[in-house]
Every structure is written in C-alpha cells, then in structure tokens.
Image (cartoon, rainbow, N blue to C red; front, side):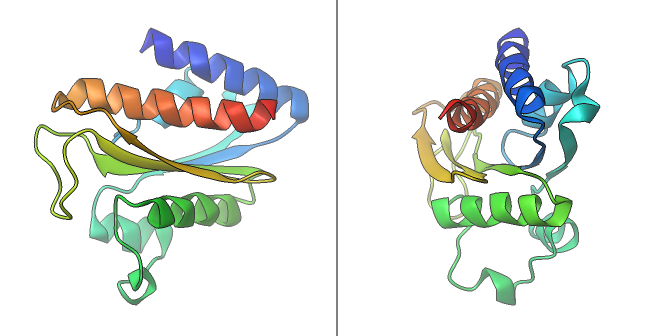
Length: 160
C-alpha cells in the first residue's frame, strides 16, 4: 500500500496545483485506487467519489448502464474502461475520470481474459486507454499492480 500511496501523493499534488478533481470507477482493483487517493491528507480538495463496479448489478445501479447500454461493449475491455471513466467524469462533474476493469485471479474471467488482465482509462482534457497483462495469477499482487498502473496513467496525463 505504501507504493500506491506514494503514487497517489504525486497525483494529489498535481490535482491540487491545477485545482482539478477526479472520480474513480474500479473493478478488479477492489477499491485500492480510491483508498490510495483518500489516504493522502487533503483528499477532499480533489477526490469527488468512487465506485467498485464489480458486478452487472453494480454497473446498473452505480453507473446507470443498463444491459442494453452494454450492447457493443464487453467488460474487461478498453472500450468499457473508457465508458466507465467518461461516465464517472460526467456523473461527478469531475475534471478527470479514472477507471479500471479486469481479472485479478487466480483464474481468468468469463470473457476469456487470463488472470492478470486489466484495462484502464483516463477521461479528461486528455484521454488515454491501455491494457495491462501481468501474466500472474496472484490475486493480491495483480490488484496492487492494477491500482498502481491506473494511478500512473492518471499521473502521466496530469504531467503531459
């Protein structure tokens, strides 16, 4: 967790300096992204909210994305990660939306992705989507890697 908070401190400093905000939707990271950002003192200046969108019901209730709204999308994919990031940004009126969706392990998901697969996205003044493959079935290590990579992706956009 110390590594995650270290990255989150850098993100927080950039957001505060820019007077910008972020909202987070995560799945396989299980709340580690939000927890890292909230561990930094002064988080209320930049963190507007977050959701762990782990199930279809969570997607419907928390993100207001119906099954029909998922037509053309597959969970654990770059287009879905982008949709989540954009939805969080819009719903919270944040400058940035950050999302993560994947398969932490120890097995893959029902969509055919192996353990260690994660897609993440940043939506804001600059948008970027990426896929990470850790090739590991270590659930906890993957969760931490997913969270760290998502935070680093946001940091990259804030520095750009």
